[in-house]
Amino acid sequence: AQKITQTQPGMFVQEKEAVTLDCTYDTSDPSYGLFWYKQPSSGEMIFLIYQGSYDQQNATEGRYSLNFQKARKSANLVISASQLGDSAMYFCAMREGPNDMRFGAGTRLTVKP
Amino acid sequence: AAGVIQSPRHLIKEKRETATLKCYPIPRHDTVYWYQQGPGQDPQFLISFYEKMQSDKGSIPDRFSAQQFSDYHSELNMSSLELGDSALYFCASSLGNRVVETQYFGPGTRLLVL
Image (cartoon, rainbow over all chains, first blue to last red; front, side, top):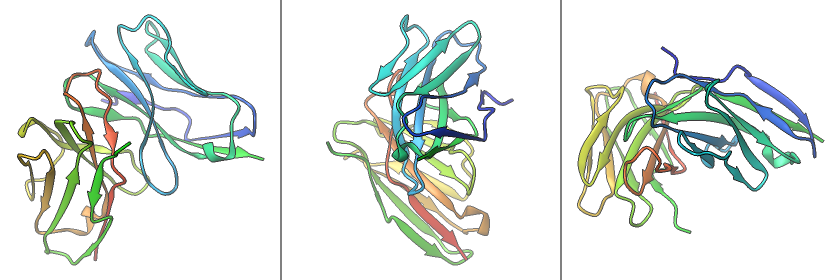
């Protein structure tokens, strides 16, 4: 069964605007971690932000913030003030056990000038 | 800051050949993970090592094997290569293997099997 769902295959945003990338997850484990990674066309996987299941506050890292709604099992990534360099594939991932991390199918974000 | 190093960055092999991918984790990181990302797909977990012992196994074919050495670097050995093995292979590392530990990815090895 799919554990991580990203329902937006592609998204467009105007430069300098904010954009929200959706991610829902499925787990019965009370302890888990949620991660967002960025993959530019060059291929590398860049860690953006992390949210733990026991964290009370939403995670923020610069222009990235995570809208964590535990009861709804969603962990949406918000990118503020979009830049052209934000154009990339974005993956949401979840880690339940000590090792295995599962990824969603990804959302391709295109920032328009 | 030092990042995960993978070599080679690109590799071209013929069917039925063997390949060895190498991964050097971030200094002091004791946990290494291997992922396979096919074209247009999300990364799939293959195998991981914590403190030089295999700790978890995912969708790794029997033709593949891996190990982590005393200096914490890891190698993924792939034998009897098939066309479907063409993919981007990532190594990631973390400090510890708890669920809260962030996995930092290397630049990947792009393998093409002809």
